[in-house]
Length: 357
Image (cartoon, rainbow, N blue to C red; front, side, top):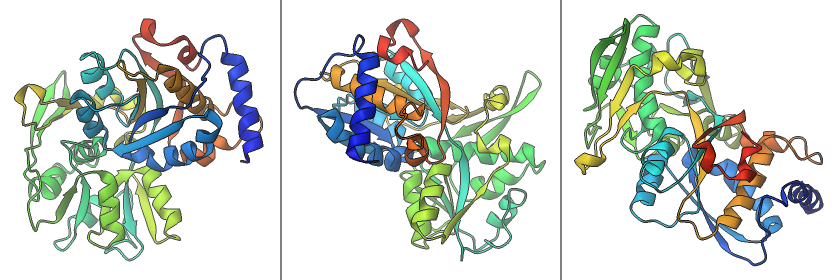
């Protein structure tokens, strides 16, 4: 999209929202914290929109839990886009670091591989756990104590045992190769699992590599350090096209992909206890569909700039630009928008944000 189109689209947005969003009169630096899986999306968006918005944008990308930890430890941030909406509700809203939360998109867990990965010619949604269970196989995922994709990936293994009616899947692939343990539960007539992740969940030399973030697992896959990596679908899709097709991925069955909210009642019976050096800060993660959340931090000194930025971003996810009807496809990859967004603490949601909800 050329700058003429960008400026025209942005002016139209300002006309609609002029009564709700303060006018920016001077340059500033907006601190935007985003989940690793949004790195490519947000980098492209900022490159196009920074000159139009008229202020500098500093982008910080990490695992969502790591970003939240930085914020609660005093890091300066104005805007947060998390790969797990629940960690905005708690600890950010409960701790006074934010006042509201908007669920704006969803994603999927997939299994990425190289074309020359062992077993790549036969792996499928029906047999992936058998392929990964070969004695010489190495696969990886993000740290379940830090990375939402990491703890979701571990939970998929627990979910898979019931789905395929092969109860040994978790123990064969996770229990035998990491220090992560699980205990089966039975509540309200539904089978569930309590998973415990210790401070150091990986075992040196084992068949499982646990990386800081899922993005690191993808790098390890590309560098041929592992054969398969559990990552978000948009990350795998980006790697697929940037590698000229050398990277591909397996879509998991609907229930295991964590993309569909219709399984929410079943997911809530799978729980992961995260390790933390601070016992009071240890979190209990309940499995939920992969839904992204965004918010403006409560102590921001750049609230006007944050409003302009988030309004432009949310408008893009709704394809509101008549001059560029394919903007969403270019920026968002395989991340699917939630239309309308779902909010927490409606009374505290800014007026300009409510039109997306």
